[in-house]
Length: 204
Image (cartoon, rainbow, N blue to C red; front, side):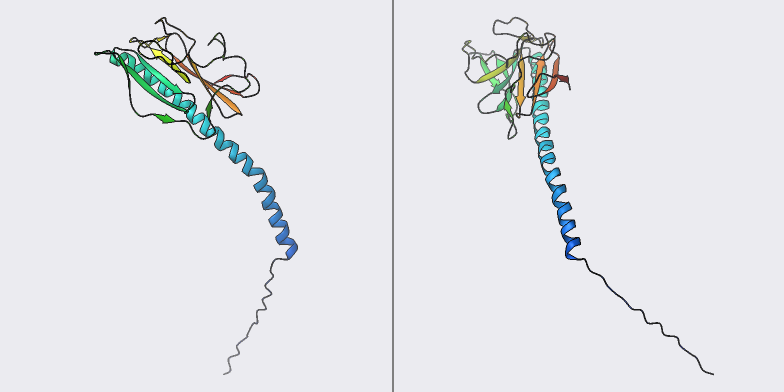
Protein backbone atom coordinates (compact mmCIF):
# COMPACT_ATOMS: atom_id res chain seq x y z
CA UNK A 1 0.00 0.00 0.00
CA UNK A 2 1.46 3.21 -1.08
CA UNK A 3 0.71 6.50 0.57
CA UNK A 4 1.13 9.48 -1.62
CA UNK A 5 1.98 12.77 -0.04
CA UNK A 6 1.00 15.83 -1.95
CA UNK A 7 3.36 18.64 -1.40
CA UNK A 8 2.17 22.13 -1.97
CA UNK A 9 4.73 24.75 -2.55
CA UNK A 10 3.74 28.19 -1.38
CA UNK A 11 5.41 30.93 -3.25
CA UNK A 12 5.65 34.09 -1.22
CA UNK A 13 6.19 37.33 -2.95
CA UNK A 14 6.74 39.94 -0.26
CA UNK A 15 6.18 43.41 -1.56
CA UNK A 16 7.76 46.47 0.10
CA UNK A 17 6.80 50.10 -0.17
CA UNK A 18 7.98 52.10 -3.11
CA UNK A 19 9.80 55.40 -2.68
CA UNK A 20 6.80 57.21 -4.11
CA UNK A 21 4.47 55.67 -1.52
CA UNK A 22 6.80 56.62 1.30
CA UNK A 23 7.01 60.19 0.02
CA UNK A 24 3.22 60.41 -0.12
CA UNK A 25 2.90 59.19 3.49
CA UNK A 26 5.58 61.58 4.72
CA UNK A 27 3.93 64.42 2.86
CA UNK A 28 0.53 63.68 4.38
CA UNK A 29 2.03 63.46 7.87
CA UNK A 30 3.73 66.82 7.35
CA UNK A 31 0.49 68.45 6.27
CA UNK A 32 -1.39 67.06 9.28
CA UNK A 33 1.37 68.23 11.62
CA UNK A 34 1.40 71.70 10.06
CA UNK A 35 -2.33 71.99 10.70
CA UNK A 36 -2.52 70.40 14.14
CA UNK A 37 0.51 71.96 15.87
CA UNK A 38 -0.74 75.59 15.72
CA UNK A 39 -4.23 74.47 16.77
CA UNK A 40 -2.79 72.54 19.69
CA UNK A 41 -0.61 75.49 20.71
CA UNK A 42 -3.61 77.85 20.73
CA UNK A 43 -5.71 75.31 22.62
CA UNK A 44 -3.02 75.06 25.31
CA UNK A 45 -2.74 78.86 25.51
CA UNK A 46 -6.51 79.19 25.94
CA UNK A 47 -6.43 76.43 28.57
CA UNK A 48 -3.79 78.36 30.55
CA UNK A 49 -5.72 81.63 30.31
CA UNK A 50 -9.09 80.12 31.24
CA UNK A 51 -7.44 78.25 34.13
CA UNK A 52 -5.94 81.46 35.50
CA UNK A 53 -9.23 83.31 35.05
CA UNK A 54 -11.11 80.66 37.00
CA UNK A 55 -8.41 80.68 39.65
CA UNK A 56 -8.74 84.46 40.03
CA UNK A 57 -12.54 84.22 40.14
CA UNK A 58 -12.37 81.56 42.85
CA UNK A 59 -9.85 83.58 44.86
CA UNK A 60 -12.12 86.65 44.75
CA UNK A 61 -15.05 84.55 45.98
CA UNK A 62 -12.85 83.10 48.73
CA UNK A 63 -11.81 86.60 49.82
CA UNK A 64 -15.50 87.42 50.23
CA UNK A 65 -16.03 84.38 52.47
CA UNK A 66 -12.88 85.12 54.47
CA UNK A 67 -14.15 88.63 55.24
CA UNK A 68 -17.44 87.32 56.57
CA UNK A 69 -15.86 84.51 58.60
CA UNK A 70 -13.17 86.77 60.12
CA UNK A 71 -15.60 89.67 60.81
CA UNK A 72 -13.06 91.95 59.17
CA UNK A 73 -12.08 93.28 55.78
CA UNK A 74 -10.52 90.88 53.30
CA UNK A 75 -9.20 91.52 49.82
CA UNK A 76 -8.07 89.96 46.57
CA UNK A 77 -4.61 91.39 45.87
CA UNK A 78 -3.13 91.36 42.34
CA UNK A 79 0.42 92.46 41.59
CA UNK A 80 0.17 93.69 37.99
CA UNK A 81 3.90 93.65 37.35
CA UNK A 82 4.88 90.41 39.08
CA UNK A 83 1.70 88.70 37.76
CA UNK A 84 0.92 87.18 41.15
CA UNK A 85 -2.22 87.24 43.29
CA UNK A 86 -3.22 86.37 46.82
CA UNK A 87 -5.84 86.89 49.52
CA UNK A 88 -5.20 89.19 52.47
CA UNK A 89 -7.22 89.81 55.64
CA UNK A 90 -7.03 92.96 57.75
CA UNK A 91 -5.76 92.27 61.27
CA UNK A 92 -7.14 95.03 63.51
CA UNK A 93 -5.32 93.92 66.66
CA UNK A 94 -2.78 96.58 67.63
CA UNK A 95 -1.55 98.39 64.52
CA UNK A 96 -3.85 97.42 61.61
CA UNK A 97 -1.98 95.15 59.18
CA UNK A 98 -2.94 93.28 56.03
CA UNK A 99 -2.03 89.63 56.62
CA UNK A 100 -1.57 87.14 53.80
CA UNK A 101 -4.17 84.36 53.90
CA UNK A 102 -2.88 81.26 52.14
CA UNK A 103 -0.32 80.86 49.37
CA UNK A 104 0.42 83.31 46.58
CA UNK A 105 -0.41 82.19 43.04
CA UNK A 106 1.47 82.94 39.80
CA UNK A 107 -0.21 83.57 36.45
CA UNK A 108 0.77 81.14 33.68
CA UNK A 109 3.35 82.01 31.02
CA UNK A 110 1.85 84.32 28.40
CA UNK A 111 -0.98 85.50 30.66
CA UNK A 112 -0.95 89.11 31.85
CA UNK A 113 -3.32 91.53 33.54
CA UNK A 114 -4.98 93.63 30.84
CA UNK A 115 -7.82 93.92 28.37
CA UNK A 116 -5.95 94.07 25.03
CA UNK A 117 -7.83 96.23 22.48
CA UNK A 118 -11.22 96.15 24.20
CA UNK A 119 -12.90 99.43 25.09
CA UNK A 120 -16.03 98.42 27.00
CA UNK A 121 -16.69 96.20 30.07
CA UNK A 122 -19.25 93.39 30.21
CA UNK A 123 -22.84 94.62 30.22
CA UNK A 124 -24.31 95.72 33.56
CA UNK A 125 -20.97 95.60 35.38
CA UNK A 126 -18.58 98.56 35.45
CA UNK A 127 -19.46 101.98 34.06
CA UNK A 128 -16.04 102.11 32.36
CA UNK A 129 -13.58 99.36 31.56
CA UNK A 130 -10.71 99.36 34.07
CA UNK A 131 -8.83 97.11 36.43
CA UNK A 132 -9.89 97.29 40.07
CA UNK A 133 -8.49 100.22 42.05
CA UNK A 134 -4.98 100.06 43.47
CA UNK A 135 -4.49 98.27 46.77
CA UNK A 136 -3.89 100.53 49.76
CA UNK A 137 -1.87 100.33 52.94
CA UNK A 138 -3.77 100.43 56.28
CA UNK A 139 -2.93 104.15 56.28
CA UNK A 140 -4.76 104.58 52.96
CA UNK A 141 -1.73 105.04 50.69
CA UNK A 142 -2.18 103.57 47.19
CA UNK A 143 0.29 100.81 46.24
CA UNK A 144 1.58 101.35 42.71
CA UNK A 145 1.21 98.47 40.23
CA UNK A 146 -1.55 96.65 42.09
CA UNK A 147 -5.29 96.02 41.80
CA UNK A 148 -7.51 95.06 44.72
CA UNK A 149 -11.09 94.01 45.33
CA UNK A 150 -11.95 94.63 48.98
CA UNK A 151 -14.85 93.13 50.95
CA UNK A 152 -16.23 94.35 54.26
CA UNK A 153 -17.19 92.05 57.14
CA UNK A 154 -20.57 91.36 55.48
CA UNK A 155 -18.93 90.17 52.26
CA UNK A 156 -19.89 93.34 50.34
CA UNK A 157 -17.33 94.86 47.92
CA UNK A 158 -16.31 98.36 49.00
CA UNK A 159 -14.21 101.23 47.66
CA UNK A 160 -11.43 103.06 49.50
CA UNK A 161 -14.06 105.07 51.44
CA UNK A 162 -15.87 101.94 52.63
CA UNK A 163 -18.82 102.54 50.30
CA UNK A 164 -20.39 99.49 48.57
CA UNK A 165 -19.36 99.35 44.91
CA UNK A 166 -19.79 97.24 41.79
CA UNK A 167 -16.83 98.78 39.96
CA UNK A 168 -14.21 96.18 40.91
CA UNK A 169 -13.02 93.84 38.15
CA UNK A 170 -9.92 91.90 37.16
CA UNK A 171 -8.99 91.43 33.49
CA UNK A 172 -6.57 88.82 32.15
CA UNK A 173 -5.43 88.33 28.56
CA UNK A 174 -3.06 86.31 26.38
CA UNK A 175 -3.46 88.69 23.43
CA UNK A 176 -6.04 86.44 21.75
CA UNK A 177 -8.78 86.32 24.39
CA UNK A 178 -9.67 88.41 27.43
CA UNK A 179 -11.32 87.11 30.61
CA UNK A 180 -12.95 89.36 33.18
CA UNK A 181 -13.90 88.56 36.76
CA UNK A 182 -16.44 91.16 37.90
CA UNK A 183 -18.08 91.64 41.29
CA UNK A 184 -21.63 92.89 41.69
CA UNK A 185 -22.62 95.14 44.59
CA UNK A 186 -24.19 92.09 46.24
CA UNK A 187 -20.82 90.34 46.22
CA UNK A 188 -21.66 87.90 43.43
CA UNK A 189 -18.60 87.11 41.29
CA UNK A 190 -19.16 86.68 37.54
CA UNK A 191 -16.73 85.45 34.90
CA UNK A 192 -16.75 86.70 31.30
CA UNK A 193 -14.85 86.04 28.06
CA UNK A 194 -14.30 88.02 24.85
CA UNK A 195 -11.97 88.04 21.89
CA UNK A 196 -9.12 90.50 22.31
CA UNK A 197 -9.87 92.55 19.17
CA UNK A 198 -13.53 93.49 19.61
CA UNK A 199 -16.05 93.52 22.43
CA UNK A 200 -18.07 90.28 22.48
CA UNK A 201 -18.47 89.38 26.13
CA UNK A 202 -20.08 86.04 26.99
CA UNK A 203 -20.81 84.71 30.47
CA UNK A 204 -18.72 81.72 31.50
